[in-house]
Image (cartoon, rainbow, N blue to C red; front, side, top):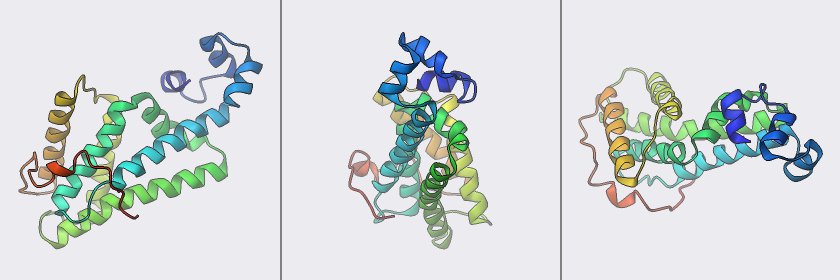
Length: 197
């Protein structure tokens, strides 16, 4: 289902396409998985939740550069593990009904706020040298949102290297002198202690 939505888009995928792919009748698919709208909601809500859960694991006790590195790392973890679902989330969430769309919009704004808070803190501490915090945040989020098109890591080592290199590029673009990989943050990479929004 996610692959069909990913390949053809939500609007380009009919229930008969899903039923054919699953080798079931449309009625059976609806009984098991719900309507096409419900399937889209399940995918989009799941991915939004994953991104927020990952962002909440980034500790606020480390420097803004380290926090941003971990936010990027965590984002790329979701992309690497769920590329098809992320593609559907980013492209097709606008086709949700009004109530669900507003719920996802609120989750997206909460997620974006993690990046904005860190970037503002980094500017105040002169760790980032950018003239506009909102523009810097939009730049970082836009760069991350495109990664589902190309980011593919075959193993943990490849993933870590790619994520570190990508973080280094983003931090450098923000005028940070911080070196990646970040020794001070490495202990936190596999901890999953949630922080408050």
